[in-house]
Image (cartoon, rainbow, N blue to C red; front, side, top):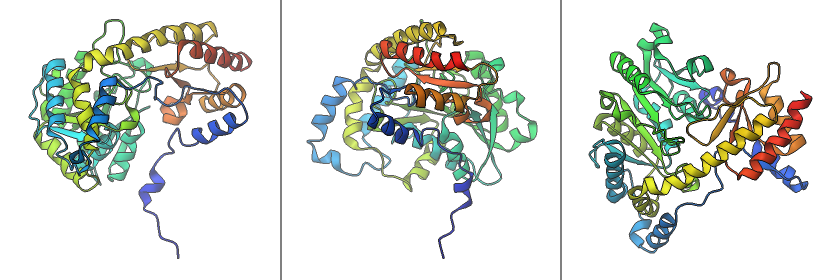
Length: 390
């Protein structure tokens, strides 16, 4: 008799990038010139200071020991300095900061800390898949909140049914947003915090793109909003701003009760990020703004070229003010999965169809600005050939 799988496994939606690596390998083996605009993993190098710091840290035997949830106190203190300098927020490094093995696992585990059977988790669609996955694995009931153009791709909690709000224990928000690149006005964040406080809803504020902003826009921390500390935990990552995706290092900050609950959950799942990486990240965070600025400038230049190139090919695109993505609508009647498959098979270009993020995202596709301007222009031209025949 075979072991029985837990019902939650069957509830998990398919992961959007699951079959892309296999298909990419097949095309490359066939000699196809593939342009990968799928995963948000840019071709930029990590900061020199991070590489030097890691090389030095691995020579210290103490850095190869268990870090547990405490991790490296110096990393916690660097996080506090960064938030004080960047956002004017103060945190206790031992009680209100938590190192993460990338923000993804922290976001998924947060659902375990605040929600369970009978509770509701409000999950944006489209959105990062760990919001949905963590909620399902925690036993909570996901309530899908569609991100729609008419609402500026914002989760409007006042549009959620009152009976859902009464049962809601967590809401996931991500601004600047992946995949839509939407940004959240201060007034919106204030309204959202007010609703969370009224209903006792924990807010998981996913903020990995905070340094990748353009045209003078400055993205905020949720803790710049009065009352946020009572209900919110903010998640950050070294992955996007500092091109350290594979290093798997992030952090969470928030009030001691919520951070303590997340710490307790994680204590049973992992023993913390590699200490040597935490040591290398101290120098990164102490120079975060200067180190992230070149990446932001690179993505802004790529945005400008890509927007112009896709417009020349007949695509509708609004220049984003943040992130590393373009979120583009398709003409009526063109299914996003069919379009993405066609541009991959016929033109060797990888993009993510909106439907991979859920039904609410149908009719769109995401382009990651992960290659240089010339390759983005080439990709737009190839995709334009498919659009012209649609």
